[in-house]
Length: 429
Length: 148
Ligand SMILES: Cc1cc2nc3c(=O)[nH]c(=O)nc-3n(C[C@H](O)[C@H](O)[C@H](O)COP(=O)(O)OP(=O)(O)OC[C@H]3O[C@@H](n4cnc5c(N)ncnc54)[C@H](O)[C@@H]3O)c2cc1C
Image (cartoon, rainbow over the protein chains, first blue to last red):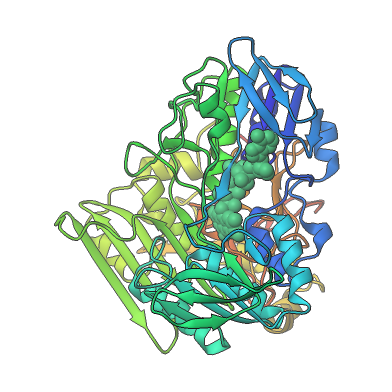
């Protein structure tokens, strides 16, 4: 095989599309552990909520794989990579040779040390299989406890609630959504959930999951001593990079698989992309794990092009999230909680409690480096431009951004022309 | 591929492109009905947006980028590149209204449909014989549909 991709998520799709931009013919094989066509992982909360048809989950039609001549090996786990002989071993006992390899193994659910976390009625919420089990379970269950008040926990809670289950969400830290949002945005989202009837408790978590004699969950003990009766526990704290395979193969691993600016790992002809990779963070300027969807696609795409022989550097990822809570849309991009002791940052917030609309802009010297929008999100993209293209903003423009009025005419002339009205040559990105 | 290129030196900010866009994407294909009825009832809205700053203005819409941020951000497979035409295509049936594309597109070319919980984006008037309606309607040739 010319190209082999381990993992069948969005980074993998990005890679196929990247490879095919450069090499229309070279053989591609994708090996995926999950026995399902590549699907929108974030869609599992929509699936659980009953908002999307199970047959609508595939990200690309079968025709995509046919026309791109991709051989799919699903329900197959790669157990070892030998970078010397350039071969892989799978659970089916096959040995597969590669010329160029991409490791896009994503994340594995993080399970905290809680006694009783192993066993029946305890779920994690990271794949379609878990979502399907929860859909079945929700039919005869009245109460569930969700551990984790981040994006995934809240979406899991919301979806179960939509299935008629009484949901309690517990979050260890002082507030929900502490990573992607600031206090006010989190408060608005929290109020929305509260209004609908989800119970959210912060500053506490589950200390112990109690199973009955038959092994079924009966309740949880919280760190504040309280006991919550429940029939199921969903652990939704997030994922950690799934790099065991890479580490065992002798690749450099830090918090994730270490890659250079071409998505190359420390072994020759081996690349990594997506949630498993520690790649360039556009704003920080160094390599980090930014486990969000768009970055996974972009890294895969960049890796794919490089695997096929083009020389393209990864432009760097941005952390970004767009999530709605019962119809209340929220978006957060870039640096939203800057260090408090750095006077180079200016934070400007506008809150309209009545309209449930909130805007937070974070400037670092002459640049916008992040923002949060709740409610009124329509100008998000225009703000993203300033963060992503690192455009300098003068005083007048800064005032307009602060007034909620960003637009393309504020862009530097030359950049504007090249983007919108170039002389020849089609614009790229 | 042919794309729509806006020229701010010529744009007079008349918004006729927006009206033409709405008409082309309406049921009735009639400007008055589109504007007075379909806009209010069905949330028909233009895929273009006119920006003004002092006396300068420009009408923008989806650039059909070669490597679009919206496609990278789409969690449902509702946005993708058509390898044949090069267009950035939108499949409303697959869209779940998560607004990731709206956040990721730095060109502000995607908006929310006012009632549907879906997005609205330029499709280059897919299949329209005379080409994109906005270009045809522009009274000052500030929009060009060409290969560059
Ligand atoms: C519930 C939920 C909601 C989310 N919502 C959002 C959101 O709204 N926006 C956003 O930006 N991000 C969201 N994320 C994060 C997003 O889903 C990830 O960033 C993205 O899926 C990463 O893609 P990936 O291709 O790197 O990895 P993954 O999607 O994790 O895919 C990796 C695949 O590799 C397979 N694999 C692993 N090891 C092997 C092996 N040894 N052999 C074969 N196959 C293997 C795995 O089974 C898996 O299918 C969400 C995540 C979850 C769980």
